[in-house]
Amino acid sequence: MKNFKHLIAALCTLTFVHCEKPIETHLESFPLIPIASTMKETGNAFFIKSKTILYFDEQDASLKRSATQLKKIWEARSKQEISFNEGIPFMHSKIELIKKDFESDEAYEIKILKKKIQISSSNEVGFFRAFTTIDQLLRFQNLSNQNHLPTGEISDMPKYGYRGAMLDVARHFFTLEEVKKYIDLLALYKINKLHLHLSDDQGWRIEIKSWPNLTNYGGSTEVGGGPGGFYSQEEYKELVSYAQERFITIIPEIDLPGHTNAALASYPELNCNGKSPELYTGIEVGFSTLCADKEISFQFLDDVIREISEITPGPYFHLGGDESHVTTEKDYITFINRTQDMVFKYGKIVMGWDEIQNADLKPNSVAQYWADAKNAKAAIKKNAKILMSPAQYAYLDMQYDSLSPFGLHWASYINIKKAYDWIPDQLVDGIEEENIIGIEAPLWSETISNFEELSYLAFPRLLGYAEIGWSKTDQRNWEEYQNRLIEHGVLLDSLSINYYRSPKVPWKEQRQN
Ligand code: TNX
Image 1: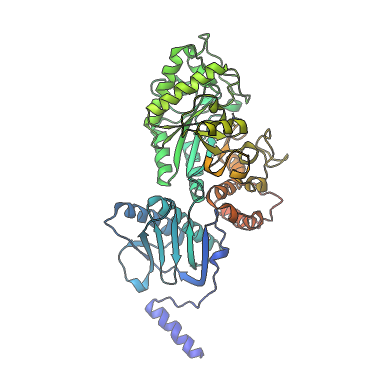
Image 2: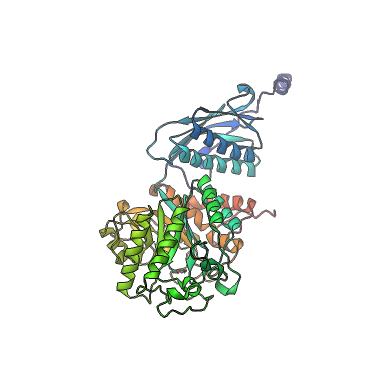
């Protein structure tokens, strides 16, 4: 018997054939976040051999782009090279990309067999979501030094088409590199929208060529008096395409008519009294407004909306519209109605904070519910869609508890469980499943000024929001989620991401990197 084993071992070595003894694997208990619609394990293992052959129809340009994306991810994680449609099948690992119809563009299926992996979807975005799943599988196997994937089938599709994060780059500026790093992490958790809050009292962060002082002067500081910053249009385009490669849509927000001190400080003619206020570096809200009596205000807004729309391929333009406490109701309605027309003229769909329902919202606009349920319900009456960002549950800038070094708490303290344990269509009577396009987790930046602080507030709560947006409600359960989250703590550690290690969660010991 012993000799026989030696003989087999020798044969394996000579022929380069993998003859590991079968191992038990458990796909179903894999800590995927967001959890997939179904996962069925078959108990075997797909061993990652030297080199991998990726089979797909090279005539199909979109499949070729998908193949190239998978190649990048697979080679980085498995450390094994991928070749397209060539190689000696029995010596190498095999993956097939198969196009077939699904209910949703983002739906996909992965079959992990002993000898090959089959990935199917109807198009590029679905393949990308599948690759994200593969990416998580490989990352966790790497963390436990495993050279195989568990066999079985995953079939998956999102609950909501809109799964977003918002980043306030106005109160504190975040560099292109920092935003890209955030985008990478959003993509790993299947988040598909990044809403950028590009202007506020404290800073104007996007170049407008016809109004250059907005950034030259209006972008020159931030909360606390730091140097601020802004994105040139070229840099913004770079960000848009970086996000696009990860199937994330950038949604630009220009907050109006309030939250406009930086613009008012940059151009005296935008003020009703013709005089510019000072730049502002505090954190009060609701004290500034554009001037509805001056036509130049609308010329200004038309230029801004036109220039930004021209460099934004995504369908949405966010007009802000929150906390305009010093704008009269009549002027407020004028501003939203007129800018809404501009957004349409430049081919985009209007988004705004829930107060925008006070104007004559056009059907299919999006009201972002953050504070006032009455506003959200009124928006529904006007045939608007609702994006769920209830401050008490979904605000990433709320402190975890009273000891949190960053964040505010005007809406609530939001610990990791509270962030996870709510159901968008069961929160407010009258905001029903059919009204909701999805969820978004805003990260306001009054109290954070660098990536470490950003990630401390965003992680790990963002993983919970990703799951609320993607996974079916009846699959979600805090206790079970917490077990997966603990594994993602290890993953975030391996990526050197600073996250909040709540004392209520039994995290694994942190490795020193
Ligand atoms: C409210 S949420 C705001 C922001 C602040 C945030 C701080 C919303 C639409 N407006 O201006 O940054 O609270 O949590």
